[in-house]
Every structure is written in C-alpha cells, then in structure tokens.
Length: 394
Image (cartoon, rainbow, N blue to C red; front, side, top):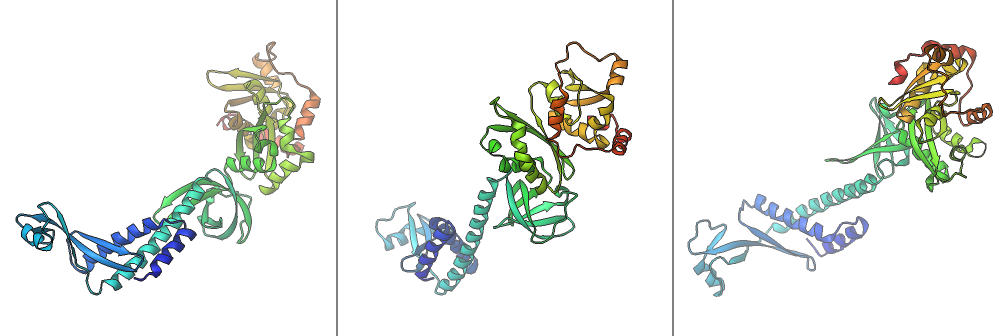
C-alpha cells in the first residue's frame, strides 16, 4: 500500500460517483478477513488504515478480565496494568499484531475490493438510471441474436428483446437502429437485466407522445390502446378543451404524424378514434371505420349489442374478427355485432331512445383517420366467412 491509494480513491469518487468512505470501510473489512484467513487468527482485530502515509497496522482487541479463558480474546488485569496502570476489568486493550509480510496481502486484497466495489457501483448506477425509465421508450442498436433473444445496445448496457416481444413482420439485422419499450428492469447477481419490447401497447403510446406535441404537453390525452402488433392497432384520444380536435391532432397535417408512427412500426395500420365517457358513443367510435346504427348497453354484464347496416357487417367485424376484437379491448366492453336485418327480426331495432345520430359526411371524414380502410369485395366475403361470434368476444 502506498500514498497513491489516496489519489486512486479520489479519482474513483469523481469518475464513478463512489463515496471514498464506502470504499475505505470495504477495504478495512476485507483486510480483517484476509488477516484471519492467512494467519489463522480468530481474535477480534481492528485495521488502522492511514491514507496519508499509505501505512496500515493490525490491532488485536482484547477484553480485560480477572481470569483468562481464551487468550485470543482476553487479557488478564495484571498484564493489562503492565501496559497501562489505568486499565480496569471490562476495558478493551489494543495490541499491535501486524505481520511482517502483511503489506503484500493487504495490497492484493485492497485491489480486489476496490475492483469489486467499482463494478458494483457501476451496476448500481446503471440500475438507478434504467429503473426510472421503465415503461419508457429508447432507441437501441441491434447487436446480435440467438434463437430466443435479440440483444439491443442501449449505450451502457445490452437489453434483451425476447422472441414473443418481437414484431412478426420485422427482420432484425446487426447495427439496425430500432425504438424499443422498456418493460422490466431487474437486479441480478450479474448486474441489471433490461427487458424490452416491440409489441407492447406502451410503445405505440410513447411514439405518439413523441410525434404529437399536444399529447406531450397534456392538451390531448391517450385514454386507451389496443394492439395486435405488426398488423393493426386502435387508440382512443380525448381533449378537455372543446376547441381542440384530438383525432386531428394525432393525424397531423396531411397525416404526417400518424404516418411517422406507422413507418416506425413497419406499416402497422392504426385507427385513431375519439374517446367518450358514454359507452354508446365510445363503442360506436371504436368500431370505426364501420358505420353503427345503434348500441344497446348491458351495464350489469358490461356488454353491448351493436347494430350495423347489412353491408357494413363484415367491415365492422373485420378480418378474422380483428376490428371487433380490437374495439372490445379498446373500450373494455364486450361487443356483439348484429346486422340491421337480424336486429329487426329479433325485435331489438330500431329503438326510439337510441342516443346515436349519424351523418354520412361525418363517417367519410372519420375514414381519413384510418390508415387502411379500403377492402375489396373478395376481402369482404372473406371477412364474413372468417367471422366467429365467440372469437370477437374474447
């Protein structure tokens, strides 16, 4: 050990943010352990570490007793008075027992302790930084991949992108820059473990916060998100200020804002709908781009029956029930869709008390907010054959 240790500790304190006192305490504890291990000593000892001179001494601490039973831990009163006449029974006497070659062992031990503490401190700093970024978005660089994971560099650490969190329509190559959503930050024996996702609904929400200033400043609020990653998503938005158009804010001039999000998600279709506290209106909006004639609400079962024109049934349901399924997730209500003819035959439509009023022009406008509303006649037939009433209720 030398006086250079003081400079080293000062440098560590500045660069790594590790308190010098913490390192000194750790070194002293490690030196006590090293002394006992290397010199077969079991007595109670104290390390006197002088950073200024770079010297250290080992002191055995012994209790003053009338009769000695364990000479490693005790010293007789007569012997203690031979050292200092003022010692009394139950006092503690310190005797220097520094071994001749303890300096070499101490230097090696100190190096190991400092290295370990630096590693732990760096891990702690990384953990503290990323635990605050849980449920946030970051840009990373793809490093490598194996059958289970893709490893994404986030600067100071590599994050793990599991296979079930990867978008099915994406190919990841080394050095690709991708935006990821941090789902979980864990402390492990090997340091912090960061898990990220490309399929989490939170990724879609954060992307809109980046692209839409009104969402970032709180003027427009994203109320809910439903997503089938890589294929289609829906978000509901609301503004307390009646003069602000929440849907138009998210779409942006000529659709630039929503298109930026679509591009980041490699073409994933996104429907933006207006949120409403009224489930009748909200469910009708959520089934956009289809036209809804009526929504019958069952509050007890939190379920709705939605009536749509016959020609809109397949559009409302969506391919393999996707539109209805996403609308149900978005609203939190079960949705059962019936055609107008079926509803009339069942006697549940029309209703005089229906709250819905529609304008064909309004629906034409709403279609602009949907990034994929055009279906061929052949696709409409496919939608009809693919529809399963039980599937869209899940």
